[in-house]
Length: 153
Image 1: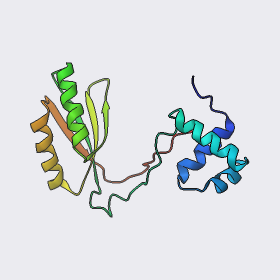
Image 2: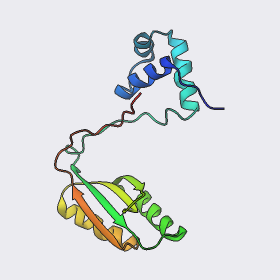
Image 3: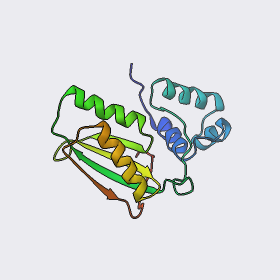
Image 4: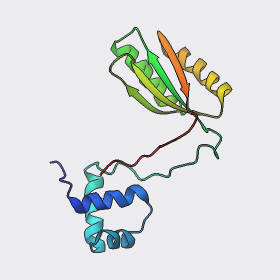
């Protein structure tokens, strides 16, 4: 059974997207519910998979992986084995922070976090050793204009 999201749930989700560490008392005050009612709603949204996880957002620059690279991949193999090989590479290569199967000219788009261009080159060599690709190109992000995990509610 699907969980119906109402305006109060949306307010809860909005606040949690800004600060997942907020206390239940503070959250309930911000959304205008009792602590227990607020807790029940949060728990129901967790159980329904609407709230998938509560995580810490880290500063990539301060952790030595401040270069974001968008990697565009084309492959001439469109079968289950090729898809499995790419999915396996994605799952074991921690530099890949986002992976998307695409429509149109690209087959896959990867978001990769590395320290610098030489580290990207090392990543590139490990990737092409694992996955058969017909074309790969990369664009290096010069400036993060907007980078958020918050969904529009």
